[in-house]
Length: 319
Image (tube, rainbow, N blue to C red; front, side):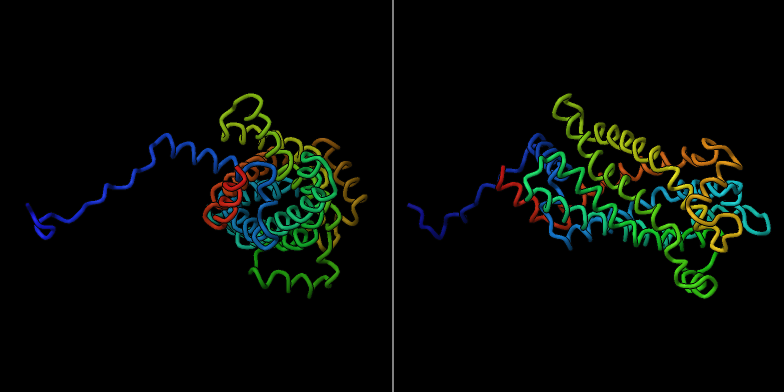
């Protein structure tokens, strides 16, 4: 009776929206995919480097004061010097002196660590090694490689923290006063420390998190916090003497008090005792490492879907 012209336009039923439960399940799945042991193996070398740089800068911007206080205590200097000027006036911004170099340090070091770890994990996986060995061994080798540039960046950062100076002017001053070879001071200790550090951050921490979730049913963030603290205790206690010796050597480029690795260790132990000397600043370092492990792994889980959505698509197809 009515013509098509008089009929109202056809209306399409609105698309069904995902339910809150479906959204929660999707978020949980994304978190699991980005925190599992194969996360870095899904990305290319360049993508891993970019991911490491972004997460490193974000983490260091959050917990930088712990690093300043750790370095200050290791060198036997009063903590109060980190928030007072040379004239003795109070200045909270003093504690952030050297932050750009620290961000460059951790961002660049994380970039090398993520890239090298992903490379070595793929290499070990192709050799037929078990997945746990791939995860931990690849992270150890990746950290070892990252110690080379990390040592130079930390040297400049420690010199800035002690004597001030600009980001570009500090390395130029170091070379001018002490020679280009001084840039390698503390490199051996840094490589050993970073190998253990990265093994704990990208190997042990995600492994503990996954085990707690799978076997005990822990919530992922709680399991990550437990894994971060466990990994920090492991890495912090084992490597702290290396870190103390490195910090003292890099803070004394003129070798007025500290010379080589063995002499520096003996001098610290003779002056303060083995425990009080070589483990100075351990509390601040445990706080620094545990928050770094938690922040880096959290930022990794949150930023990969934004920066590299193809990794989710590939994992979705494999489900």
